[in-house]
Image 1 (cartoon, rainbow, N blue to C red):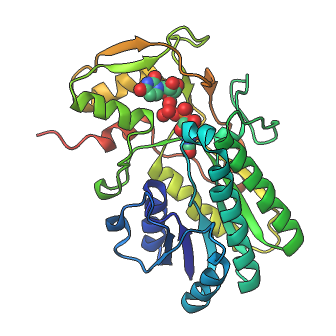
Image 2: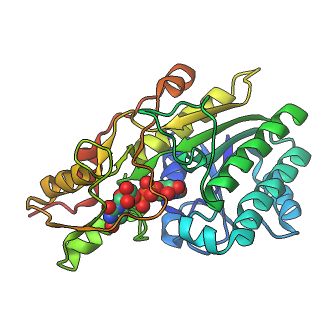
Image 3: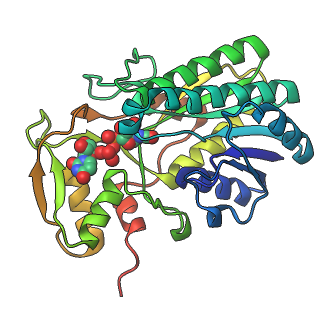
Length: 319
Ligand code: WQD
């Protein structure tokens, strides 16, 4: 079987691509290489393509036929929340028009299985202990909006064309499955903490007066290797007939505060990471933790790794 992985040169996409290859699947990488790293996908044929361009459906149709693609994992997207606030048109164009082009190509090529990369950003600021997929979504930035609109588009295509699809709502993805696929962008908490430590700076804690046990924001940190496993499980699920469109959270079901992450990283490093409290960051929900009941029922998937595994995976082995 051949699976096209869009965004394969990215941090998460490359973990998915390599895990699929390990399971015996042929991978066709599709990436515009705007932020991807070429060495992550040396092992795979590459279609270098911006999915939002007008010619994308035709290019994809030819590539799907040439490589006999049977399913797609679609991760290619812009994902910086702050940037999405400044450049909403670009985000809608890349994330929504790109998806529409992909779906057009899939339909005309008879490729009828899709795993769509969505985000917990679709939920917005839910005021609950754990969020489940039936909850109303109210994204608070254009990035989250494009992911929710993307889910709607996939659902509509599934109803209209018989596409079999699953949207996976990723929570806070971190860690690395192998060093060469590590997250090289310094955009999320764990890589930011590592960069601060490398520079000899204390960890910045954005607010310690939230209504949480230690006052810092709580998130659901899921290991990227577990997330990759969830994609493989989702593709297996879509191989069976009569699978209705579904939306599934991908998290651990456990919350960790910013200070919990600092403590875990300190254990992995073997020395304490000092902290400095800074003002709250705009738009941070105090708590965002997944209910993982549904993905467990539907895919039989549960995270196998915890926060200490995440932190240990990003710290080079100590002498
Ligand atoms: C985690 C927590 C910060 C840096 C974002 C997007 C979401 C999704 C994943 C992608 C927060 C705190 C951070 C620092 C800190 N994106 N923090 N000091 O905001 O939960 O989710 O990434 O596809 O849509 O919103 O993740 O890693 O930025 O922050 O205290 O130096 O760490 O305030 O509570 P977030 P994050």
